[in-house]
Length: 201
Picture 1 (cartoon, rainbow, N blue to C red):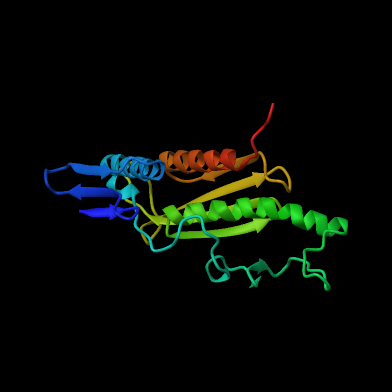
Picture 2: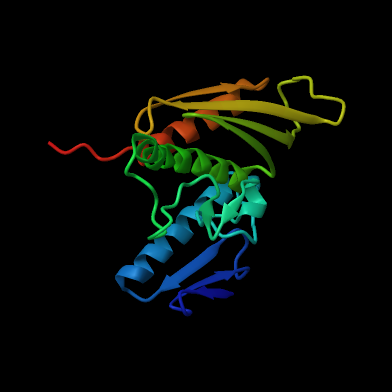
């Protein structure tokens, strides 16, 4: 038995085989936590390997040590700073372009973080509005696909945004296993759609 949200949501396992009992106090926050927990339990029931415990926080910006970029006080070292005020230099066209590029850059880095949440070995290369992600993982495949000498499979994901403000993106996946390629592509396409600004009518 364990509790979440200051023990307002409790989960009991083991009283009956293959049954988890979720009990919570009715409140908006409790309902959200309980709904998420039930969704996780149902997802685990279909594929136990799909849930991975990690000590890394989800969706929080990672420090420079994890994504290999030089950072100064939490900001990219390449960002221009005005000498007087310490604010980003947007007075020139280059400074304004650099500010707008950061939205696409943040989208590309979020995609890397999302992949890292699912796979342990992800390498990213960023070029302008494009990110190339090499995913390497151990695989036991029923499809009979040949793996490399180390028993690993490598997939390459390429995401290309149309401009500096994020928006629409082209997603391509090269992977020996068609099913894994479709799953990775579908996941990242949904993420790209979620990142796009809402269109008002």
